[in-house]
Amino acid sequence: MRKAAVLAGFLLIGVFAGCRRAQAPVSQLVVGEVEPLTGRLAAEGQNVHKGVLLAVKEVNAAGGIGGRQVRLEVRDDQSKPELAQSAAEELASKVGALGLVGEYVDSQVAAVAQVAKAKQVPFVAAASLQKELVSPGHPYFWRVSNLAGFVRATTGFLLDQGVRSVSILHANTPGSKQLAEDQAARLKEAGVRVDGVSGYAPGTQDFSSLLARVRDARSEALLFNGAVGEDIQVTKGMRALGVEPRIVLFAFGADLKEFLSELGPLAEGKYGTVAWEKGLGGGAGQAFYEAYVREYGEEPGQLAAHGYAAARALLDGLRLLAEKPGGLEKALKDPRTVSGAFSALAVQTPLGMVQFTAYGDPVSYQRYVFQIRGGQRRIVFPRVFPSPTG
Image 1 (cartoon, rainbow, N blue to C red):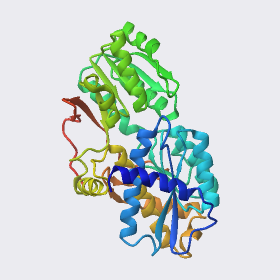
Image 2 (image 1 turned 180 degrees about the vertical axis):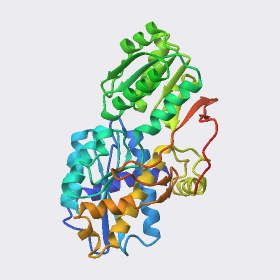
Image 3 (image 1 turned 90 degrees about the vertical axis):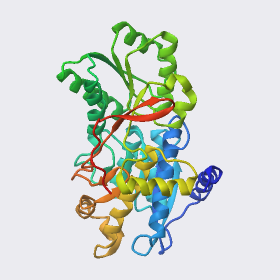
């Protein structure tokens, strides 16, 4: 399937999803995906969505779940939390979805998680950091990323580079703010001077006042926790104001093709993080890469790997629940049964083996720091990669 077919698929899914269905046929099992396919997070959401689609296709090709084919119903939340909530409510209440997957940024994720809890529908998020979501208060929530992986990679790299001072800018979303707080705490513990931790409204276009503070503080490094559109604007702003830290590290977004295409030479030397790249993830990573290229005619990014991993985890959890006495629908009504099934998961994915703690965090989640050199990403940290699995 080539790019034109993929875009047509987005439109077809939207048309079919607009029809009200009380329940799926007995031969089908409905899974709902809520995703920012338009709006400020569209680049991130569309990457996640392609990974989800691939996972569903593979599970259906292998026979589905309990003999039932999976029907994926997709809703575009337009990068707005209130639309994410209403989309999840529609999927769980009117469409009859027995599981939810997707989302990017915790303001969106939290909205869907609340619906999942109220409707007793498992939700596996593709990208989430907020600490409060992995707690006893969210028994129907799991995620394939976590805060600790980002903190280890970003602060570990700066310490490895001997950085002595840093400024941190973050979007005022729950996960990005908590990431900044934990980065600052870890660096201060290690004796690094933190010149400031400043938030900004998501979607900000003008970073001149915040960047002036970074320049005046003469910070050796800048940590930036925002979406790709904001990464692009802050990079352009640094050039305009003459802000030149030795290291500029973007926690999110610099891996996306939009970063390179928009910035061109300005992207050179910048750092970012990924959880997966071609060549990582062992056999499972290679199989994902090859399947994705066959399906879409282009190379996958790490957010597609997150979407794929989240969907495989959700579908495997539903498979385990379908094997319980009384079947899937009965098992979903008992939080202890649901928790037990997802706690027993061990799914090999491009991100590694996905297993969950009792409260929904991944047991293991690794981020890698890359630098853009000659228009290509080069992994620079950790210096010794963990042994591949899969």
